[in-house]
Image (cartoon, rainbow, N blue to C red; front, side):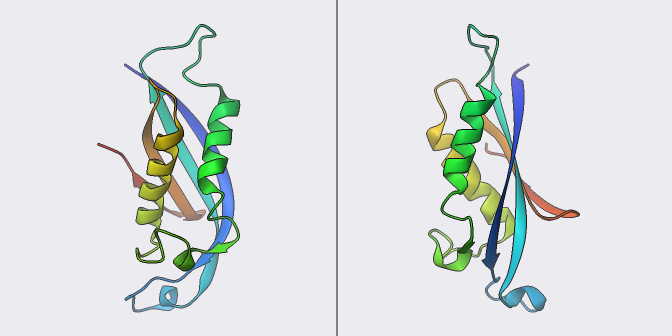
Length: 123
């Protein structure tokens, strides 16, 4: 069974949902919480899948384009609806590109409020 790490970060951003009927079609913002689960089958010589410091750096780098931005103007959301589900997948892909060999994204959950979240689990 692989090991998993959980790294959490926050960012603030505005968006509106295209082709949506309701309040969320209007410009609004969230203080997003992002939970990233990283997995690995083996530990390094220090007994870690990945140093938390490195995981936090990787996640912060992946989130940087979105922080204090209007998501609808930031690629890929300039053409992709910036839903919580799409945001979770895009963040998972951005984090995955930055991970060292042997570490993978097990899942990403994006929280747009304390009670509403969407998760993405890569294949």
